[in-house]
Image 1: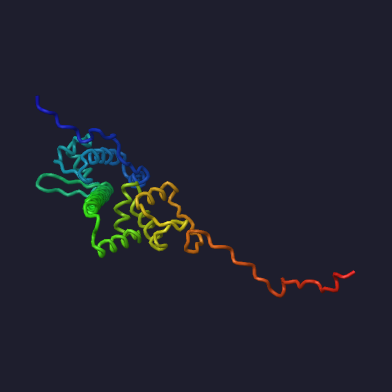
Image 2: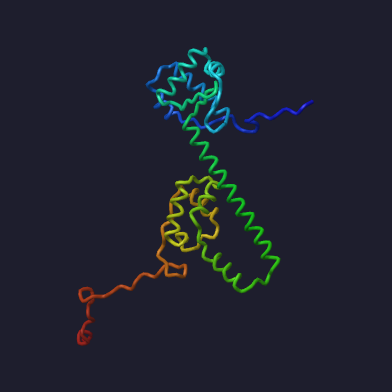
Length: 247
């Protein structure tokens, strides 16, 4: 018996992100039949998972939108004329693109590539660490450059953007995170250095994306002492004369 090919959504929840406010605002002034046909077409686009577009014949579109070919052609022309979707005929077939879904698919692909690149950099770092352990006595120049790099704990914007999707932080917030901590030397509010980028991002997210207040430190990790009170002529009272103490 031949093995059955798994369905596209096997093992995944049959759900999609539906921005209902955008949909209602965009379709508010269109006839009900157009709204219904477009919703059916959207469901098919989401099901196909092909970057926000589908390519079918006119008869297939008629089946998808539960109508005949004449009405299907009228609906597709309406979608194009009202800028609801991008409709492109070619060689007897018609491609319909939902721009919102296409944009979301591109962002998802970019995040996947960043995550793949980040995992590759982690594997390279682990391999380099194995080589270092095998050579316990590296040259002085190599050891000094390595220690200098690890002690500085300076992260680039790309490193932050690569690490952010792994802990569920979007690109805009990751950019804010980078500019904030890069501006204060990659130190937490208590003056401690950021040594683990993923943990720092996750901690920031769990704190509701609030930045810690930078404490006033003296470079030793402790709070600077309060300045001594300065006495002025107005606040200073001279001691009484010695004669006042005599009976």
